[in-house]
Amino acid sequence: MNTKNDGLLISIEGIDGSGKSSLSQGLAQKCKNLGYPVLLTKEPGGTPFGMQLRPLLNYQTEPLDPKTEFLCFAADRAQHFSYVILPALKERKIVISDRMADSSLVYQGYGRGLDKEMINLVNNWAMQNHKPDFVFYLKITADEALKRIANRNTEITSFEKEYSFIKTISEGFDTAFTHRKEVITFDATKEPSILIEEAFTIIQDYYKKHLS
Image (tube, rainbow, N blue to C red; front, side, top):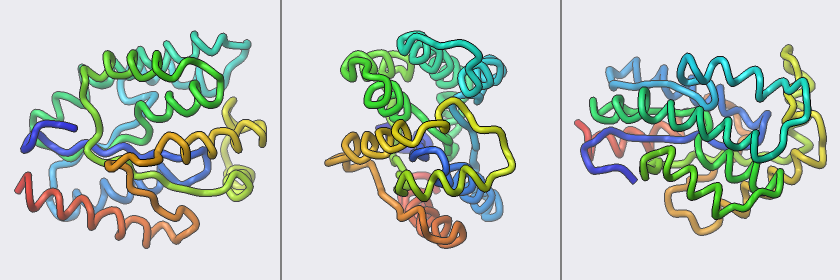
């Protein structure tokens, strides 16, 4: 959690195909329309360094050791926080990130079998002990997510190829987000416009109480 009046940090989480990008972009646009100071970003890829890492991780041409995979994401996260997220929060902006630390916990912890305590330790270090004020979790079944992925006009990433892996990730998010008060779960099968309105209400309430 960040210091009061020091911006608002929101992470959008969920399995691939859950609609994270649509929600992130929709929320950022709604904030801009109302004159709220907002920064839309993502992991990996929120910095020039991250943009170079993103295709290497999403479209792996050789098998990566799970530790290598995680440390690449952690390096992206450290750069992202130092040069993008923390400066924006100091300017009291609303920061909306498509994925953050919880994705590493779930994908490399539950998905790849790495030690979850170690992942959390490294993530806290990379994030300089900051945590999101809210995590918007888009919950959807693996079957529905795969249907959406198949209908997209984009290349399948290394994380979207196997049903069993996507199902494990879905279950991992459910487990990781149990009893986390900052996590707000949304039914990702709803229309994007409805999800945007539901999520924006939370942002607007926080903004009026702490940042206006």
